[in-house]
Image (cartoon, rainbow, N blue to C red; front, side, top):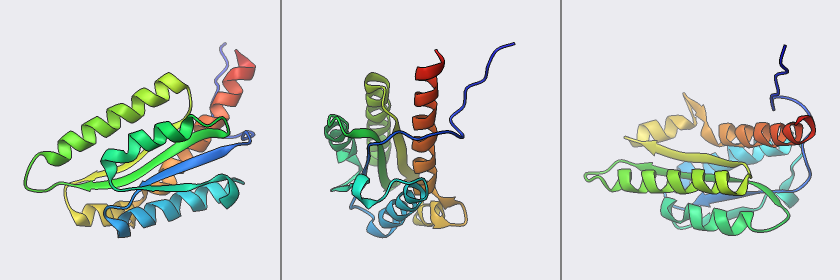
Length: 159
């Protein structure tokens, strides 16, 4: 019988978790940041180890996440932003490029990088995903990072 390894419980490692957040769509992005910070604080990661780094928009998220995870003290990153569909396909290009870049960084670095970029068709959808009827994706992104940090620790000791 094989052993199942999960990151839903267990110890968390020390270090900094960088939150890189867009300034564009400020009401939405600020709510995502608040959600992420609340979740991290409840797990023991206070303000001194959860820097919030603001960038102009979603396009700039990967570049600054990369700069953040290059620091030895940073153990994970959370990218937060919001792109709302407009009259053109601009949103599709931004969303695809950002998501692929963030995933590639996580794979190459081995560090947890949470994808907290809302890719919505309407402002209403964004509001619902930043603390409204669907919850707060900032919380979910932080929870994913915490689970991956626990899992990383367990994998290192189990394999």
